[in-house]
Image (cartoon, rainbow, N blue to C red; front, side):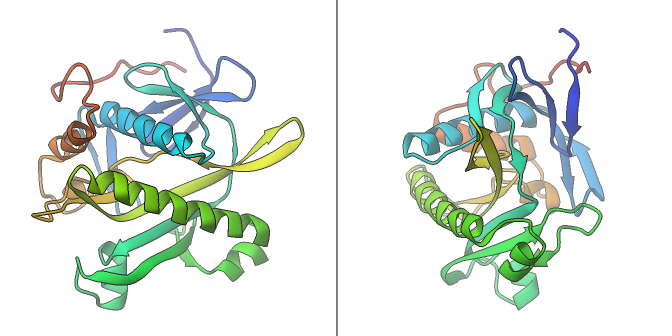
Length: 254
C-alpha cells in the first residue's frame, strides 16, 4: 500500500488525500463507539459492511437526483469521495419514537410520531453534540437560511425515499442522521449529502418483529452486532463477496 497523507480521522472512518485534486479516500474502520466515545469496541467486518451499504444507498439516492459526495467504491473498505466543506450540523429525521427522543419526551419507544420530525445537533464531540434550533444554526453562521431550507427539503426527500426502499425489504426506518457539505466546483457552490448512510447512523427494525439490526445492538449490549449489519446487507442484496465471516482489513498507512 503506498503512503498516503491522512487528512482526518473520526470514530468510524479515516479520510486520506485522494488521487486527484478535490477528492478524498474514505476508509471504513471496524471501530464501534457509543455515548460520546465512552463505549468502544472493534466489530470485525463492520467497516466492510458499512462501506457496501453506504455505497448502495448513496448510488440509489443519486439515481433520483439527490446530490452526494460519493464517486465510487474502490475496494472492500474504501470509497472515493469529493472533498466538501462539512456544515457543522447533524440533521436527524425521526419517524418513530426511539432513543434520545423517547427519553427526552417520555415517549414509549416504538410509538408512531404524528409526522416525521427533523432536529438539528451541533457537531461537537467536546459538547456531546447538543440539540440546537434553526435560530442557533443561522445566528452562528453554521448555515444560511437558504442553505437550511435546502437541507430540510433534501432531508425529507431522502427520508421518504429510504423509508420506501427499506420497507420493500421488510425493514422500518425509525430514524436517520445526515450530514451535508458545500461542494465547490468552478467557483460555484452546491450542497451535497456527505458522510455515510449505514446502520451506524440510522435505526432499522424488522417490520414484523421490531428486531433491531442497527448500532443499538452495540449500544444496548444486544449482541451479534456484525450479524445485524450483515442482515441489512443481505436484505439489500449486497452482502460482500467474502460473506459475513472474518473481514478484517489491512493496517492503514499514513
